[in-house]
Length: 351
Image 1 (cartoon, rainbow, N blue to C red):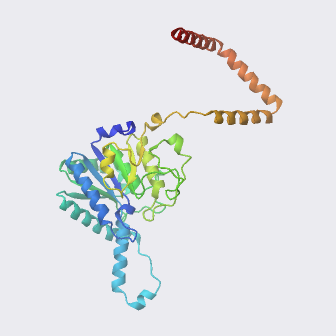
Image 2 (image 1 turned 30 degrees about the vertical axis):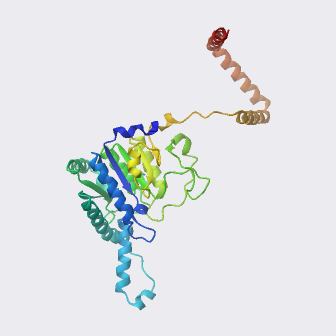
Image 3 (image 1 turned 90 degrees about the horizontal axis):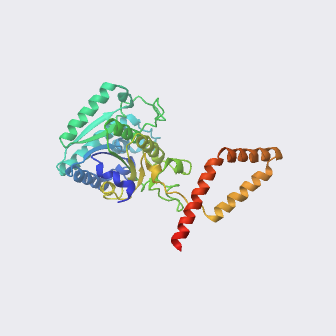
């Protein structure tokens, strides 16, 4: 087990966020095979004593696909020749949510599991009484071995594009999952995507590399995000933002592929799959050794910058160095004596 994944042995409650790209195929229809494999993993975790909470996207896309089919079968040939008006997203959400939960219920029933639907909006979380009741309800469901399935209630949500709430958090199901992880005191958040994890650049670029552990100080300015998901709202940008938010609050997050079988099981076994976000990640960063070539280049660049300065600026730098040496004279002498003694001791051992 990688030392960065050692925390998984203490995981009891986890939240799994399933993205629209995982729930649906490229043609907009449900990805039954992937959903079935996901439900089987959740069944295994439930049997092992884990408390599993699901946040599932896909209602809007599924509803849109169903409404398009209904329009097709109920329209004449002449009607189909006319420009087609896009469906209202909230109507799609209302139709799709019913179908999505029916599928989850069917799949879990085949595995002798019961699921429960919980729909929330961003405004709900501004109410302390709501948050307390939510925690109590989820606690009761988990005690009964029921799988709570959350989704944003898009059908009645009053929030407008670009899907940001008043606090500036990008609000989609990724940030909802992060918020629930805090509210429900989860030990781990797993964000399932259509790629293996977070890459240094667009996943389609052969030069991009998978980042196994995200270190904010190192990676924040180095990553180049590709296009957003073919479906859904925010893509990897939203996932990273939600993951950083949860990790900063002390909840580990793993972004991994929902296409690969057993990935959730592998995460909980401590395997190094996906990208880990952890508030202690900066402590695990290896110290990068600077080679001779890099030091020579740095020395050359510094020399050029020094030559480009005015004589007054160069004189000031030298005086500042002299002042620093005088101010730390005692400390420098002590360190030099210590180094001398250590070298003498080593030379005696070699005799």
